[in-house]
Image (cartoon, rainbow, N blue to C red; front, side, top):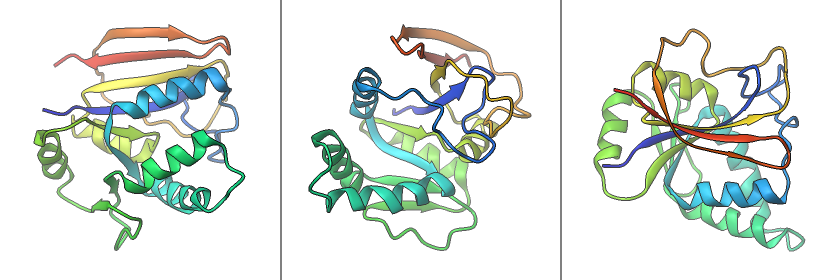
Length: 188
């Protein structure tokens, strides 16, 4: 059975984006890029909320047409173009990006059915709104959090109002940038 894993960058005070929805506070460098590649290697299907999905849909296809893009960006753009993507949104009518499944309602049943299929894990990329919904439904099996060395003071969090969830540390890793990557299993 596949797991549903939440992969999210968070500030030290628990925000997934700043008050303007920005991510410029994440210290992204070559070392962290390699880590992100390791994470992507375990993904069977990325899961997005509407906002993250639309951001990805508007950006990654353009990379395929840019001959000046790095090899890493081109490889990721090809992967994300072809992989089966899942978007959770009650407000979207359709998802037109190649190979995308839209889940509008019956979220718990749809995700449970996807988890029962063979293959690599379902991984939520950021998407704090969708993550919050999936947390409330008790569907997330693991948290893969990169804790960035910054205090934002405000922003958007997937954990606001969440019920207590007990976690078991599976691994942790520290990067030269000060990022700490942690992986937790949900204790059931």
